[in-house]
Image 1 (tube, rainbow, N blue to C red):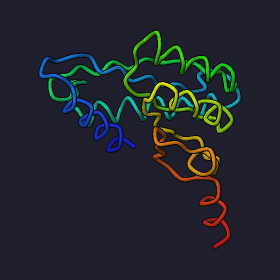
Image 2 (cartoon, rainbow, N blue to C red; image 1 turned 180 degrees about the vertical axis):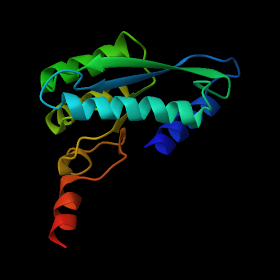
Image 3 (cartoon, rainbow, N blue to C red; image 1 turned 30 degrees about the horizontal axis):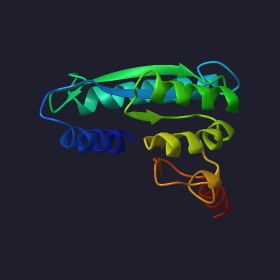
Image 4 (tube, rainbow, N blue to C red; image 1 turned 180 degrees about the horizontal axis):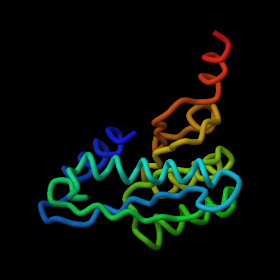
Length: 153
């Protein structure tokens, strides 16, 4: 996942003006709710990955990375509202998350509406990159069909 996030950020930096600016990353996940323990692992992993990829600088090409944590409470309506707020109010350049597949499915149209990338991690529903997919959605992990196939073999 780290490689995908940093690659996307590098592309955004190249497209930006020469003047350095903050790159805002909204991380929307189940800080509270039924998947809280799993979500904490995702949050720690994202932070460690960004620290590693930037050698502790939290910057890419002179652009400071700002991580904005948001709690979707594992509720689709809350996640949808949090993503809208991240793009609209916080001016997030990219979003990562959510933990829960139902929340992810609710967020897909928001990414398309704002024409901004949503890196889905770790939600696994097939429809996220299947029938509900749009060009602003990227998945960094497996989906539930891949889980089922690997368990069957």
